[in-house]
Amino acid sequence: MIRPVRKEDLVRLAEIIVFNNRKNYYPIFQDIVYSFKEYNVVSVMNMFENDPVFMISTYVFEDEVIKGFITVYEGEILKLYVDSFFQNQKIGQKLIDAFPDAIHLWALQKNTGAIAFYRRNGFTWDKTTKKEEGTDENLIHLIRID
Picture 1: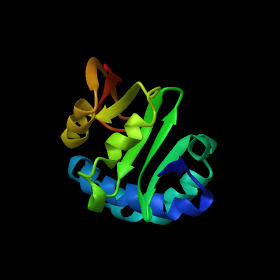
Picture 2 (picture 1 turned 90 degrees about the vertical axis):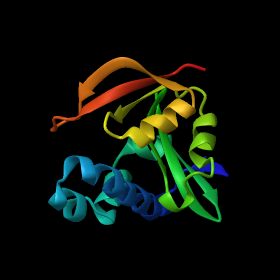
Picture 3 (picture 1 turned 135 degrees about the horizontal axis):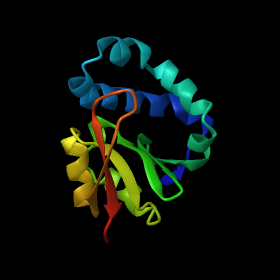
Picture 4 (picture 1 turned 135 degrees about the vertical axis):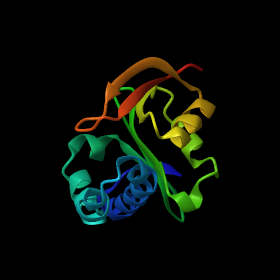
């Protein structure tokens, strides 16, 4: 079931995003203090709770437990995460399919797994790039083509 996020969901969503970010982004950025000290479940939960866009634009995929979530705002996918234990079960695809008005997003260029996932789900790189704020890493702009 896909439903709007509730305040009591925030701990679970923070768990999902912190683990996924450590797994996927630590190898790229190699910032041990940020990845394993500053960026933690409590800090992320507080960030979510104080972000009005997140609270009105996020939807969870729940099947006994929350297995993933998507944040869509003004046609852009801002976040899409599936707990690594539940990946490869079409949850990400179901979240994308639930929001046909979500037509673009930015992905870290070195996050090849995410880019491959978005390509399988109807997105293509429009050759636009920009720098990830505060880093030398590139983001690429993906648009829905279906």
